[in-house]
Structure formats: structure tokens, C-alpha cells
Image (cartoon, rainbow, N blue to C red; front, side, top):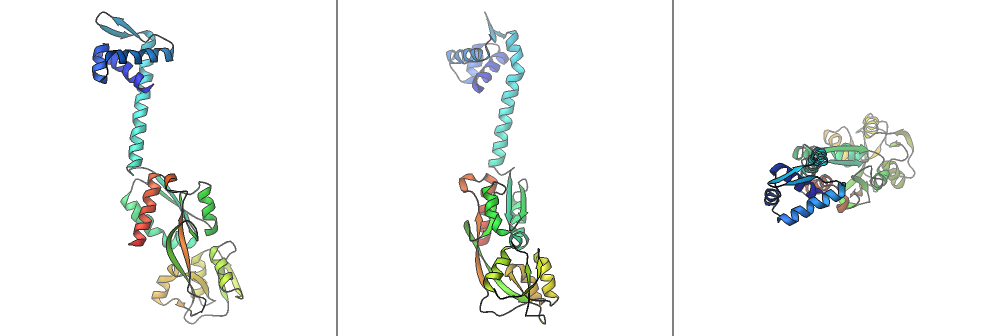
Amino acid sequence: MVSELRNFLLVVEHGTFTAAARHAHLAQPSLSASIKRLEEEVGARLLRRLPRGAVPTEAGRALIPHAREVLASLERGRRAVREVEGLERGEVRVGGGATAATYLLPSLLASFRARHPRIRVTLTEDFSPRIPELVREGVLDIGVAQGAGEPWRQDPLVLVGAPEGERAVFIGFVRGAAMRAFQERLFPEAEQIMELASIAAVKGQVRAGLGVALLSRAACETDLAEGRLVEIDSPRTPWVRALGLVHAGLEQLSPAGRAFRAHVLAATRG
């Protein structure tokens, strides 16, 4: 019905079927047929033919503002689609575990926002094993998870402690955290004296010399470089985990989601 409404308004604006057909680039019989289809759809005569033109009937006058509203709304919709496809608007919802959310993603999110300032980017931190589930449920567009999705990067896990700190006990994470599972896998005999929920809390206790911890090297690079922590030699570490980008498929990603994925992969390869 969109073309029929547009042709109706052309007749109203130009006053004749001939002029309206010329502006619509149609043969006059085709334009007349479209007006007839519209009248059949609304159930009323919309235009009254005169010897030298056509004028809207009372029903036609009632339809005019609604026809204009429909065409204006359609144009707004087209403009919104162009903006999204052109990455002038949009949203991408990203998620990951503590290491990804705190150390691996922030610089990538910042550089993406700098390139696409009108795209809204949100970040959700959750236990890493839950990230694929959140993507499947549609809560996230793209997630970072260990051993799942599209290969992204390697993440070495290392054993760290304070230079003169305790070595016999572990400072660890709460159950459900991916790093807790890795610790139990690599060091099943370890005595864990603390269960903490954040990387910052774990590092704080380890820096105080209270024990050792298994952490992503990315999470403690600065501490290692500045000497607040040291990497402890162990035949079990470094243990390298493969991180992937989890999403529902390229065809399911929005233009913003596809752009973010490409940005992350390009930055990592670079």
C-alpha cells in the first residue's frame, strides 16, 4: 500500500492524474489502477475527477494526514536502518570473565568506541563458564570464554607470589570461578586459605606475602614488571588456555556486533 498512498498524495498535490503520473514516472492507467486499489482497500472513494483535474473527497481529506504520517514514518525507518548499517548507531553487548573484563577487553572497548563513538557498547562480567549460556540466551552478543567459540588468543596462567612471601598455601577464588577450576586441576593438593571473588583482592593478599595464586599473566604483568610479584617456577605452569569469541554466528550479529568482532580480531593479529 505504500506506493498507492504515495500516488494518492501526488494527485492531491499536483491536482491532476496526468501530472501525478509524470512525477511518479508511471503511465496514467497504472497510476489510476493504484488509486483504485487504495480505494478498494479503505472502502471509500478518495478522489473526485473534474473536467480539469481531481480533488479529494471528504474521505480523501480524512486520509491525507495519515498517508503523510505513514510515508514519513517509513522514511524515518529507512534512515534508521542506514544509520545502523553505516555504524552511526547501534549497540553491542559484550561479556567475559574477570580476566577478560578487567584486563583483556578494556583497551579494545576504548579503541572501538573511539572509532565508532555513536555505537553503545556494554560490558558484563560473569563467571567465564556462564558466558556461552548468556550468548545462547541472547543476553550477550559476543562473549569471551575458555575453549569455546571462534579462536581468539592464548592466555598463559602462571603461579605468582610476593618476592619474600609465603609459598605453602594458596590464595584462591570462590567456587564457580574459572581460575578456581584451573587451580584445582593443576594443583589438586593445594591448601587454599582464602576464597575471594575478585582478582584485585587475590593480588592484594598475595602482594602482602600471605600465599601464592594462580593467575592469568595478563592480570599481573604490571606487578611482575614492578617487582611486587614474582613468577614462581613450577613444572605445571605456565599453563596456556585458549580463549575464544562466542557469538550466535556472523549472520546473527548486528552490524555493530560484526564490526566489534572484526575490531577485536584485527587488534589481536596486529
